[in-house]
Structure formats: structure tokens, C-alpha cells
Image 1 (cartoon, rainbow, N blue to C red):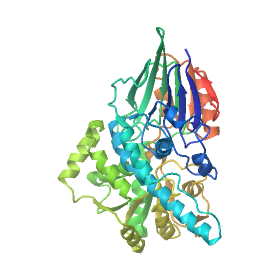
Image 2 (cartoon, rainbow, N blue to C red):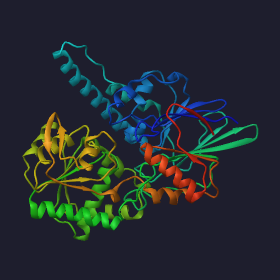
Image 3 (cartoon, rainbow, N blue to C red):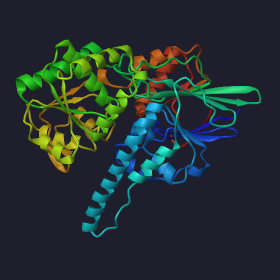
Image 4 (cartoon, one colour):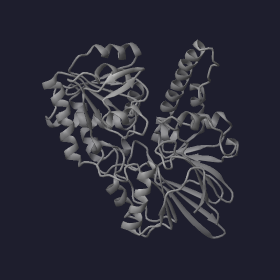
Length: 466
């Protein structure tokens, strides 16, 4: 039985996740992600598809983060006319995240074109437009967790809760041919155990082949309690003693909602009080509204906190910042504010303006709560660089910087091993992806030594038979 995988991105690197799957009668993608960070990302995003998009039968989307979904508008614009199967929450999020990405592509192309015109060079076109992104909506087909679909001949697919962000899924594909079957499981991004809002990742009993992420496959996050203590100290020390602002770069989907949950929970416990949070991201505001519409995926603790907050709305003040003018007005705040904005890796969006106005101030604090890919501004700050370039200016890093890994939405090494250990028998083949090259290689070695698995790290663009 022939099942072949070609890794178009997200292998030996963290972004651009997309896998071309070929069976005897079908050709489909698992994810269609955008490359982010690094000097090569623009070229990779613009390159031609390895097969005509019109020849792809369907797409299975594990979740809405742009590094897994951000090239869907380009795929549809270039001729793809099949369905995109995903959970209902992922569909809702894609309907706001992809147009936002298209708007960013248009804005960046316009800025680059003006710069080129001044130098007598040719203008550039956006990777895709907001209109291209809105066209994806007609292709989305929501699927409930645990309900099998048959998207092609001899195929059945199940979406299982990945516990990473709202709507995130592990995708299990069963291929049947002449009485035989093969089960190929794609982990997507797995969540850190004990995350707020979402449930822990679902167990998968068996797989003939497994494609498994390894983002934090070489490290263990700080314990949640230790992380929360560090977070409380960062906020209280900055707002009460130092008199500065707390700046939190956060992904609009997942991290922003998790941090709001944490701030509300700590307020309920009396460990924080009188906090004003400026949510400076229209996308994060809309994603928060979508999150509140999907209580069916909440864990019990989140339901209890939601009920408390609805009964005590004055306890934590959250200001939704809409227009660019309202965002710019935050630059005059010299202290007492928690400002949360995107992008989560600091390489685009409104967070760059807040870093420009606060990073050089010793009384301020930057709290990093998510993964920072190589080449991004966030990674440079985490790595301790003393001066960084923000919006074309060299800025001194004088603010305190806290990197709180325990709040990450990604599973760490022990989470990944715990999830892998719940298989009833080892997968016939494990392909380790979605990690920096050294991390993926190390985690594959860990799977071999600790679990006795046949684990390897594929190469980008190379076809693998499973």
C-alpha cells in the first residue's frame, strides 16, 4: 500500500509546516503554513508549488496559527478548489486570522514599493491580498472532534484534541486498499499539560506511521507554579516598585487568551490587584470573542473562572485597543500598564512600537511567554543582545526581560514523551518535524533511546514512503 509524504516546510525548522501526502487515489496537504523569521522566509513563501494546486484534492488543517495555515490564501488564489477540513473553532479563527495576514502582506508590499520607488526600482506585489484570504472561507469544512470523515476514496480522517490552542487537532488518517489499512497520524502542535482553557492532548492508541512535532523536544519548561510565581513577581515588581510598564508580546490566538486567563485567575486569588490590561491587537480581541463562543472545548477550571469574571467584571480592567491612533496613544503611558500586543515573535505588528518606547527604559519589563524562532526580534531579546534594531532604530535593551517557558502553549520534552508513551505499541515509523534541526535530531535520538522507536528526521522536499 503506497502512502508517500513530502515535507514542504516545517522540517528541520519551526515554521512553514506543510506536508504533501500521496496515496493510491488521492493527493492532499496536511497544513499549509507560512515561513516566518530568517532571511529566507520571503523567498520560501513566494516559491512555486511542487504540484499544481488544482491537482490537490483537499487540505487537512491542524490549527489556525499562521505557521500552519498562512499560505492557504496563496494556494486558493493559485487554483486550489477543494475543501479545507478543520475543527469548527479553527474555521472561525481562520476567518479572521487569514484576512489579517492578507492586510499585513498588502501593507508590507506597499511600504517596500515606496522604498523601491525612491531608489528607481520596480514595485513589488504582496504575497497575497486580503481579498485572496477571504476567498478561503468558502473552502472551509468544519469537523467535530472524534467524528470520522471520508474526504477521498479509501480514506477516513479523525480530528482529536491536541490541547495546543482553541480548535487545535491531532489528525489521524486511515488509508484502506484491497482489505488492508494503514493509519498515519500527524500530531500537529501538541499542548503543554495543564494549560488553561483547553484540555490536555488526547491519547492516540496506535499508528503505523507518526509525524510528530519537536518544538521544545530538547528542554523541560519550568513548573507551572514556578512560572506563575515568576510572572506575578514580574508584574508586581514593575507596576508597584519600579513604576514602569509590562510589555507582553503574544500571539493573537492562544497566548493572548491564556495570559488574560492567568491575569484573571491571579486577580481572583488576590495575588494581583488593580491591573489594567491594554489588549492592543484587534485580531486578539476578535480571537478572544471567538474563544468565548466555544465553551464546548473549555476545561472545568476555565468554566469556573469565566463564571467568576462575569460576576465580578470590575476586578480586572481589560481595554480593547482598536485604531492605530489608540495604539499610538499608549506610547505616552509612563507606568502602570500591562500592554499585550502582537506579533508573538516581535517581528511585525504593534508590539514593535511598544518595544521601541519601553525596551530602553530600566523601569519597564518585557515578559516573553511563547516560542521565539531563529532570526526574529524576539529571539534576539531572549538571547540577551544588548542592542537590537526596532523599526529601523538601534534600541538599547535596558528593561528587565523574563522568559517564562512554563506558560508556553507548546509541549516540552517530557510532555512529548508522555504523549508518545500512551501508544499501545510503537509506531512503525516516527518522523520528527517542526523543530530547529539540532532539536529535532536530539528528540529523535531520545525517542530511540527512551522508547525504542524507529525515529528519524526527514529532509525538506524529500519524499518518504511510510
